[in-house]
Image (tube, rainbow, N blue to C red; front, side, top):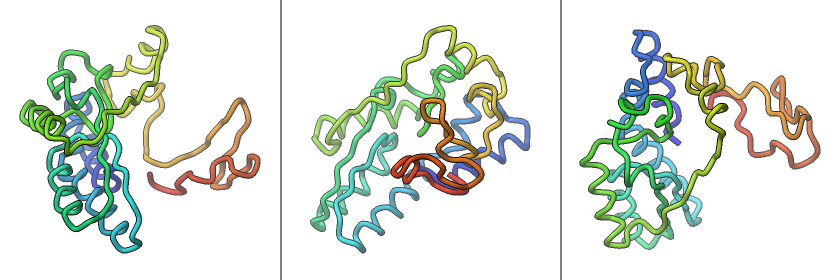
Length: 190
């Protein structure tokens, strides 16, 4: 969700050699998430449609939606358990096992998110459940360089290929699968 600002932050920390899990979190500040959501709110206000925000990790975003709701816009907010129970310190303790996007925030962010759960501003807590065996997770997280955690591949923010059930459905910039497969893929930078 944080788009270009986070991509630039991630590239910058990698260029200066800061590639630990906590560095990954530092490359995606709360303001990047807030800016991305602000763009979404402006767009949906323009076209007058409801908005369901997922995986919100920062109180700044929740606060911004209150003003939008006060103007009558239909907007719902979802957060995830990791943004209510874990802080960025989990990255020091668990390393890449705790890497997620949006990133984990500090204790003050977590406590404020609970305030919004309790007052009903956050509508739902959803799961981003993606189970892995311990062996598979070790393969994903064995790199000390956080930019290489995704199955050992160097991340660059561009979709190269999508394989669905053994069939390439997107590659070389083209949707190649059956009609409907890959139609929601972004072309270019994610």
